[in-house]
Image 1: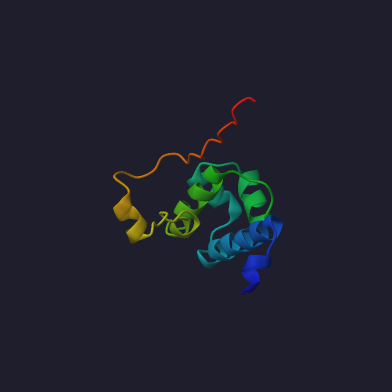
Image 2: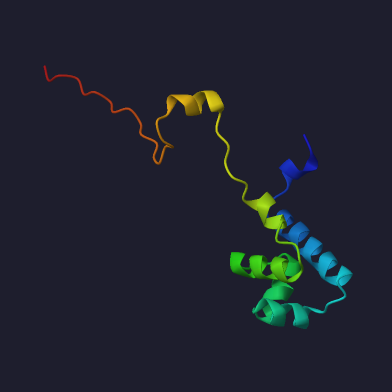
Length: 107
């Protein structure tokens, strides 16, 4: 197993922030410019790069500004389904139903 399976949520946020910061620096942009072009607050960009709590909207806006919207495809891939199982279904499932437990007749 790779090391990525053992990262905590905080570690993932830190790695993501470092990657965004590296990308910003490669584009030779400062945080203020990225914030303005993204339509977010400067502090939001700082929090994102520091791996601190931020919003999904901030992440999406910043990645678009930095020219990397394809990163989002890795964060939210289309769920796949086993073709054999799909053949059994008439239409895609919308809910999961559990079997009801039958109650024993009263004695």
